[in-house]
Picture 1: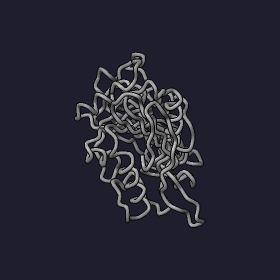
Picture 2: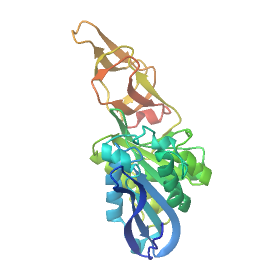
Picture 3: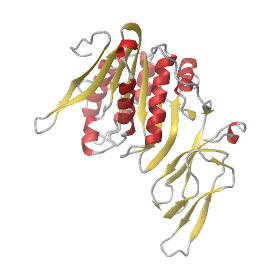
Length: 318
């Protein structure tokens, strides 16, 4: 890793220089490397590609606390903060307002986002066989723990099911995303979503940490097998946001993981005087995998994200 050599059976923390602030202060990418005694896969786990999404830091902390390099086959590369600039400013973006997750694979001579993306690809992704990227909801939204990935790739699907999040959502690749860059390298990437920006969500952190360790186990990296899942994940190939048709104050009527039916009211929106009020109804059957956390809404704002599931899965409780 860089110029560092990590001995087998060791966990070491190091820093990869990124750039200097205008003050001259050096910013670095914090990396933890657990190098197993026996050979095996190399898996990266990353978080805070968006600087306001913090749950992944706690997931990686929990995973490293439970990981014994002396009983590990292969190597784990953990990058708890990828967007070091965004973390400092508590922002989703970099100082130039670019989205790092639309900047991969990057360039050593491009804008700041391109340079940071290039560093991650060359020092982390290119060394790995599998990637796990940790995210939360954004823009005042919270997400049910879920994996987003390419369900049409058999190995990616196997790893996603091993992770064990309640819902696995098939997600197309987006240009410039880390998942797309991973595909170009031949590296399967799981994107975990859970909780909301700017704060820790204990339940989402626990699901994430267990899921990462389950993926390690499924790759033969751990001596002990994880506990069996109480419920198998459900798979969805489509999700849709239900949006507000007028501005006002939104009183949501549904929770994460709730099953909803076509025609069901999911929110009431009313104005400040209370004279105008209307119900927002779903046109879909499915499970709520994301919801707005704010009360004030404008026309077109996303309120509830619904994953459309098979009839058999609609009877499940989350």
